[in-house]
Length: 372
Image 1 (cartoon, helix red, strand yellow):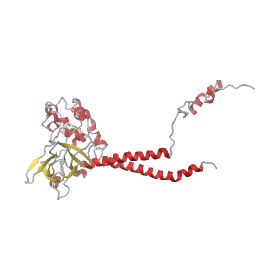
Image 2 (image 1 turned 180 degrees about the vertical axis):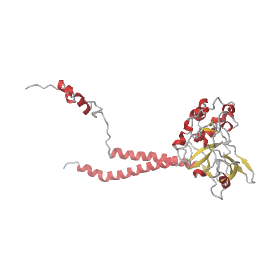
Image 3 (image 1 turned 90 degrees about the horizontal axis):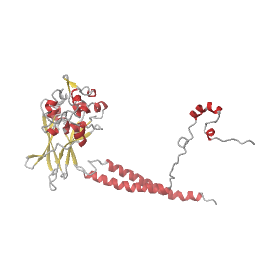
Image 4 (image 1 turned 30 degrees about the vertical axis):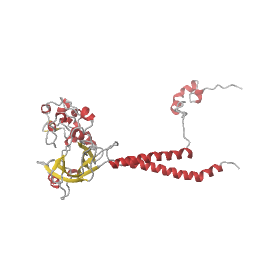
């Protein structure tokens, strides 16, 4: 009996000798290498799902998620918020005349139009209040709109100031001069002016102080947006440029405060951070609480005064002003609490159903496995 030699290479598709050498390349292309990864021999762990492991998991998830959801939902409901729509599409609305005036061929009316909207706060807003402006049916997430900007120009680059990016077309140049800031986002800057007044019982009014600084992200204010050549003598720096088409004033006249003028104007910075959805709100002003006794906004009657500049009829949009407090979880948003309560309830319900099924049929299956 002849002894046969064994070679692992022959088994793995690598025959030895001259005959195997000619076919080695063809065999390699058809059979994977004899490795643990390619031959699927890596160590693995697969859980065995039994009633003893699945049922406690469902109950634990339910008992954890439901209290968290209730806490989030209650916290969201404790946030006080009021929305005032001042679009003025109906003839009975206070801002109808201003809205009708803004429907001309020009983007803005030749003379500012002012309207007032009265409202009542039934409960005081104790903590700091955030004032937002909101727009509906405005698609800031459109691809061409989002790309229509020059970040180098906004970061204070001199060469980009005089030669903006082609992404800004058709708002790159006007009257053969470079536009600063260029692009469709800057060109559509929200420019309504909002003022808030408290109305005393005798009819007199007191203006509520609105803080315009501190509304932008720190990274935007100090990193992404910079004035070319610093904040001094912006008139000379922007002398070779022209304002955006739809603006009434150039960028260096947005504010008298040099720390809030030009590209670092916080209203401008907030607008340049585009929204993901067509209905959105952006922070406009802050109302700080004066002391621990007096609420930021007392209960009573208020008047919102609007200098109506921003037309929304061309895209069938709506405008609104929002006053809101915040909590540790941010603004008013009941969705997260509802989501936690729903997931926890479903898991708890499935746990109960599976427990009943296991109690009813589990012993029968175990007894069937025992031989007589």
